[in-house]
Length: 431
Image (cartoon, helix red, strand yellow):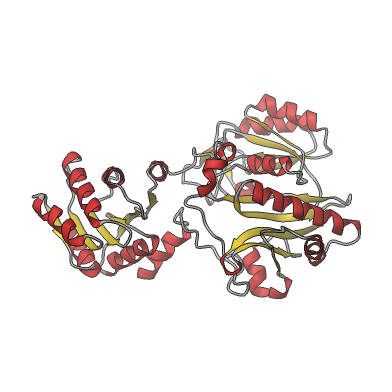
């Protein structure tokens, strides 16, 4: 059970330290994660690809049924695909509260596009990845539907083991790449990219051949690979994943679906990209926390965990669970902490009606414990804290921090170690 708490937190991504291993240990290749995810809709990612010369389906975006109908007519395609634009996966099997089933529809009749869009726009779409009530659809993508005669997988990502970008590909596209790596590792191909010279022609051609492209299509696929790397650099991506990179019966190599992850530390030079960030589907508390460089993950218990560092956060969740309690969340302060951040963190925690106690567990390496203590006392007084507060501090300037808390006269329960802190937090709720 204790391990499950850490797994739950890790599975939700921590919004800061994605624990997804791309191709298991066989490739020794993992994603490097940004501080939090930049959420782009499908059409926004396709637009970025289009601007870099990457081959994607022709498409338009509409926010009214009449615009969708006009877009379908302008496409003048043999077949049209209409996609609801939400961030959650599983759209094809989702259900709208309008009664329409499926967030992805194919049709050869442009008039049907308008009818379908009328049942999508303004209605909530519920999938296995959305909240229970679903997510309101405000935009639809109207795209040319292309047949795919063969699907492959291709990605460019940052690899710690190689200290730089790596291309990963497989002729088995359109499915979970981790499953491919586990069952048929010989079908996973990897090319380390020299950051100074970029993707060489021989590398691109070799990868295209390994993906199964033959004849003129090999050169076409190699060109797409190089363009995808140009996009990777241009937008400061940590990952560009194309699944599938498909081959059409007409002899085209097309990027049918892509996911792009960005380095948030490059926001200062990627203003246009980050301006597209769609926060409407994000958890409001997580969004507010991000404004203060705090990392927040909501859980389903009643003891708030206020820590510094994702590893310490998961350990704190686990030990609370071990003592019979349940974490309500964890909130990670990170490194360069200021008193205002501590105050804002307490505001977030106390706003959660589920929280019946707060456990502060800080290990001060680069963090000054006295700053934390000052922030805690300020927050307790100004917010008139009503729930029990247990504080465990260790590390830099800890003696001064303990003095500040002791002299404050506030009802703060001190703890000597993590086990003691968790035990006291659980006991405070059971009183």
